[in-house]
Image (tube, one colour):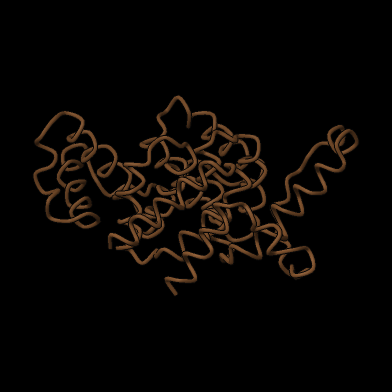
Amino acid sequence: MIKCKKIFLSALIVGIVSSTFGGSTISEAAVDKTEIHFDSEIRQADPDFVERFNYFSTQEVSSLGKLESRTRYMSILSALLGCQGVDEFKSVLNIALNDGLSPVEAKEIVYQATAYLGIGRTKPFLAVTNEVMKSKKINLPLESQSTTTLENRREKGTAKQVELFGEQYQDFWKQRDINYMLAANCFGDYYTRTGLSNKDRELITFCFIAAQGGCEPQLIGHTAANFKQGNDAEFLTNVVTEIQPYIGYPRSLNALAVIKQVSEEK
């Protein structure tokens, strides 16, 4: 299994995936529902590009990634938040809400993204999410998923950090102001919410960080946390495969390198 993973990673790095998985090997059943909806002007002006991109991003990538639909939607939406693809986020969210992703799950993805991207980058996505949900006659606000108060958020946030990363985080919040903020806000305000499991939350965090790029030290820690939650190296490699069309090769290759590093250290 390890040898197979190394071969697959090497194939991506040298750029031979497309020649290895030619069109004749892709099953028609592999076509997914998230085809990029280029407007008619682009379709007319750039037909070759539209044909090849949509084939790659739907038939080819779906055949390689092998994720079930809910996980795939969560991964793509999180990656689009990370890379600031708000137009495609709106398109994919429309499809996802019709295909099994719940409104609560969608909202929780956007909420948690704020801890990793900042409100300056997530506010437009919150507005788009509300717009899409209103168009589908989904009543807002949704039922609250909060489990903490302003008085206990730091304590419960620390408990969540210890649960995910280990006992060394018990006094982590005391070391400096940013550590307190991480415990109270990132984990106390978001990770403690219902609506998504620990496994889900570590998955979307991996996608936020991988997609924005330049945060590989943080990606290492959350890759290890994913492993602890059962999202192993093979699973995360499939996630990167699925989000590659949305974030590009450089960030995908960096994420694969982190997966490989953490897997070897583990």
